[in-house]
Length: 133
Image (cartoon, rainbow, N blue to C red):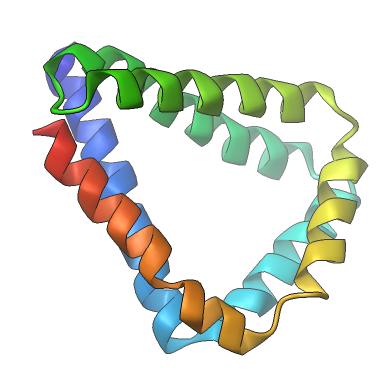
């Protein structure tokens, strides 16, 4: 079970690093993707909703399982439970709320802000991978 959790946590870390790279290199494209996803959610795309939240739950559970073997067990456990809890809350809330919030947010973020914030998921992803091993 620990090996599977490690693989999932490492994959989540790599995904964050990839997102950070995309944010730094193509911030306008990131906003377009976010806009498209938000529009799909507003149209009650349950498949997108449960895929997104299901992956978050999977990452959260993997953090919880991996916590005892990680370099930061308390951080992993708290972050894992927060991911699981917030994902479950998003799943039970009306799907249009999720999409509307995304559409509201994307209209307020400038491409420069996306680029400036790109080191955050880069450090989080790298830190996640480092602490998991």
